Image (tube, rainbow, N blue to C red; front, side, top):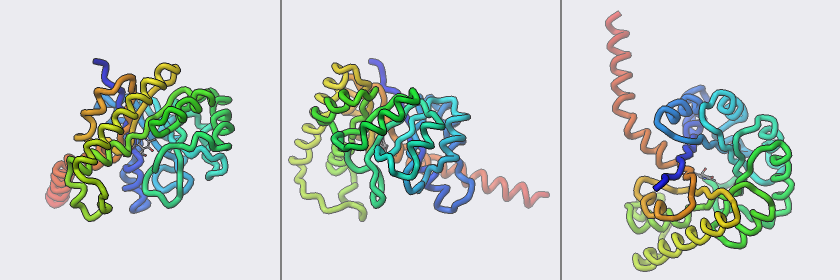
Amino acid sequence: MKLPDLGLNIDHIATLRQARRIHQPDPLEAVFIAKNAGVQQITIHLREDRRHIHEDDVARIIKSSPLPVNVECASDLSKGGVVEILCALRPHKITLVPEKREEITTEGGLNMRSSALAETIARFKHHNIPVAVFIEPDREAIHLAKELEVDGIELHTGAYAHCYDLLHSCLPHSHNAAQSPHTRQNLAQQIEQALQALESAATLAHSLNLGVFAGHGLNYENIAPLLSLPYISELNIGHSIIARAVMVGLYQAIKDMQQAIARAAAL
Ligand code: PXP
């Protein structure tokens, strides 16, 4: 079985940097670690509000990355001059996503009937930059994507992942969990329905010669059922990997500081 490529979303490295507004941690450093670890693609999102990745990050990463760089951006041409910036920087791929100022992360898939979408796609295609659209696993959205002549679709796995986590993890007991209106049986059905929708969407998109990618909310537990779905050639994952990196890297980070202190004391 050919495994899907792993696209690592490194926005959260920049989120951590922006918490202090200094130079560390540097998302570009993460690109080289990702390359050494066997990641196939780097994903970054240049948002209108520049809450994490900034345009100089995009420029530095595109210039120095040994991996293809997929840049997510809003489909609305008016948002923060991002389309012009990215046409000039020429990433390997653009993924158009819906973007709202007040959201914590990308909510839902693109409205494929938006009037701005065709023009934004045409701008990138004019610069020979492949374009994917981030959509819900919905057949009509896939047909519209084909009509708009995009190169691929990224299927939003958020609904699937959220139901999976509500059923199988301690998420319902977290102080961040909203009250879930679902029973356990209901959640099991919803997971099944979400997987069927993803499978049918992936099959349709593949039959239309569109690249099929997927992502959002995927983690070390909910990834397994997704791997039985056909035609998905790329998974884009961010939060769960960066969250785990904090934990698996913490011991070494403490040891490095203790050594730095001991070395300085010995001078
Ligand atoms: N794919 C797209 C289009 C996204 O917007 C995001 C979140 O930035 C991801 C994948 C990664 O989602 P997560 O951080 O939940 O893994």
